Length: 517
Ligand code: MSP
Image 1 (cartoon, protein in one colour):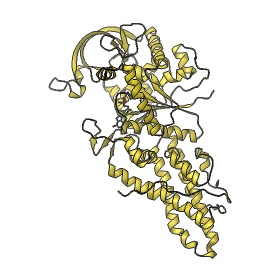
Image 2 (cartoon, rainbow, N blue to C red):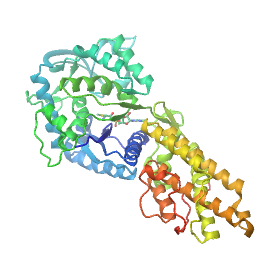
Image 3 (cartoon, rainbow, N blue to C red):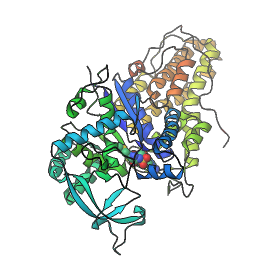
Image 4 (cartoon, rainbow, N blue to C red):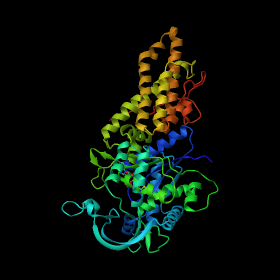
């Protein structure tokens, strides 16, 4: 049984509406998943929803619905959203599903039996909005708490705590010895800085049922439910358990209920946003260690989008609605823009003008124009029949292929797009330099015209393969217009010279209609 390349995203809070930030993260993961499949790896891509907690409970009460009905309705919207983005996830986890809850409870039992938890009385301040306990360090200089915490209440209650502090030095050593564990580098340094400068406080992992009913019951004490983050993080192993992953099943002491065994754990990449880094780079590794499980290979941390230089916010109406953009411009244009504009790491800024400018320059006039004129000329001058092979652009195509492969292997998606685009630019330049429309007027230049047309058609084919993880619909259209039956989803097909002389291409049609804007 081969271990699959296992990639996950953060699971979104079900009670929010899907926005640009959610879409961006899921597209990053989808492109990595598709790229790995194209490179020949078996992939398992997981995304899903985080459905427990106070906010969901409150929202359901407001709408006079049971929390489960409320979640079921919203989950349908989120699943439709995943489809709209063209995601190729292999599973979709919802934390209210029995298969997830079982594993959370098994983990709690294991960790408790191994002595990682203790019960104590807590008295102090609690933010209901963030569902978290606050400490003196969270106070502002004037003694109040930041309004971002929402209502802060004073509490005195018994809870279960997870002994994080015991593992602080181990975690620092691990991060120090595994430079690729957190990427990009500056996020790794941020975590190391935090671990060096502060002492980890033990994590409260329970909430009394009297205060919060909408959660997973703690198996060894029915008076409590699990803290949302302990519940949510476990999705990364609960789905492997449900898929029969032997490593996870052994750690939680369960037998496989699935007929098939799929080896997934440890995850290869957890794609997350910068705001949830501490949960993934500090709490999660310690939870895994307590369960005796290996750590994920990489936590890949992306930045946050703003719109027009301002925080995206429902309340001010400063939002980008991915569905509206996709309906107007197509899903590939949306996928292209977010990955081309923003590297994985820094924060980005969406402007409608920036989106249109890239659409027009890079998709309509760049790739779209190249494919359309190359195939239209082949159709017009050679009746759509591929002429004899020629390899004038083979060197440039090979360079794009090698650079793209190496960038994809390192999850450098923006750089991969730049390498591919360099080939588009070169090929468009080649059209201008060789002027096939002039060659066509001179019968003595027939052989030269053949060469040019072959180079252009073959470059279009190579581009379809290279772009496939990013622009799956467009890549399929290019293959279709080339009259090729198979899907352009194998990277090895990007090798030069696979387009056969004598093959008849299909019908050229614009890939990215120009818009008057
Ligand atoms: N439910 C938790 C995650 C649990 S993972 C075990 C959560 N949900 S969320 O809906 O608030 O955020 C989901 C993801 O979207 C996070 O990775 C977050 O960083 C990302 N984004 C939310 N807003 C964003 C932007 N404006 N820009 C980019 N990504 C953003 O946190």
